[in-house]
Length: 245
Image (cartoon, rainbow, N blue to C red; front, side):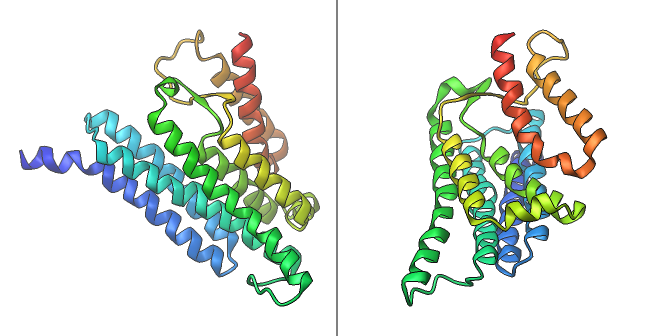
């Protein structure tokens, strides 16, 4: 009985690791180390996968586990990536901290404040998901881990490839704001998107997932780490194509 009790809480412990990774990601982002913050968010994604996998494997489902998972996801995939963009905007504007002293700083503060859309929309997306019974096999709106992956892929690819394209992107307030708004609105949209959970190994029913896997493998083989930011666009394309097949 004690063993069963311990097994029941394994998924919740892994979910807590997701939350911890998101918390430390925010700390590193606050120190200006957005690369380490991005890797910590990636670790949170792995924990997010493992908590669901362990829950299914151990049949350890619980109401508290579902709520804890959403709370952890808000931090790791909403607040943390939103704070990374906040720091990138800080750097691009050369304004460190929302200090309202004159018209220019008011403008900068308003620009920085757009990043609040990401955690707010992430929370709304997760709240909707928890009560929407139509999202058992497919998603409606961009999942919060995909939102976080879109953000950290740009940071990681830019850091390790040293490409001028990425530095131009992360150094442009206009592009960063547009990026934030698009990702945030996609999370609360009703666009049908693939769930990556595989129930069988047949081609039938997995066409979209196979298309996504093929696009990702080919792009990484050709472009290396530069292909990382293409994962989410490919995910959206594969999801839309799967609707036609």
